[in-house]
Picture 1 (cartoon, rainbow, N blue to C red):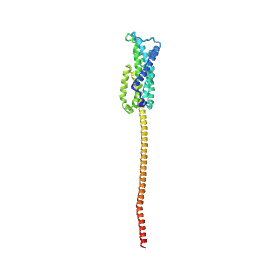
Picture 2 (spheres, rainbow, N blue to C red):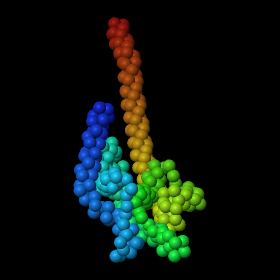
Picture 3 (cartoon, rainbow, N blue to C red):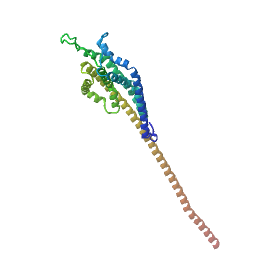
Picture 4 (tube, rainbow, N blue to C red):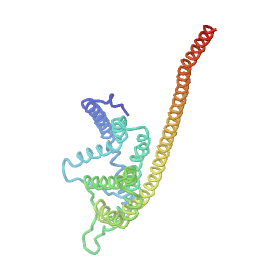
Length: 327
């Protein structure tokens, strides 16, 4: 992370954001052109589950009722495929803009989610393409009749635009639903949710899951259950991931607390040693003061004794002179 005195001004941040958006848009435009060149192959790939459900060798067809319907359908297919193909580039540009503002441990924590997001979306799209759509198309085609009872046959004549809208809706619904572990795990890391709270609200999650599946899928039981069951499994996986995230966060917090306690104890030992050294210095100063005081007292006593001795010697000399004079 940049130091406070090296932080970028707001204009440089905006310029950096503009550059990242420019590269993302350019990647989307380039991939859109490539996908439009292969649009018929992409649309044939999306139509393959319906063709397989109708049966091989059938003379079935798809229709369009508006002059511009096929053109705009191809544009939608190209844009849909371009968004899917350019997702790694867009995520890389977003990460390049956000990463300089994160600490090293925060970047390491986001790496798994950065790679898991497109992979989980791909798994959701693969599940709806290879498992849900074949079952759902067979269910809808079962309503066709030969006309022996009604006199008129009921046969599917699928429109190009309607079929693409249904397929895109299913793929986006399953792809976004498979992002549930990433979302809940990030919220658990941020402390917004807990594993115990998610487990406690499991019954409400079941109701919300089936309502979401009913809204996002066609009105048939197969696709609703096919979307609801994976979401519930992903919810349980999210609880496990949140529990693991809480354990890691608790372990890191305990390590930080131990380090703080160690630092505090080290500082307290230094304080005790400093106090002991100060006390020793104070004791030495008192001892030197006492010694200097005793020395000064001895000198004073010596000074007091010296005049008396001098006066005594002078008195003895006077007495001897008086005795000699008397003789």
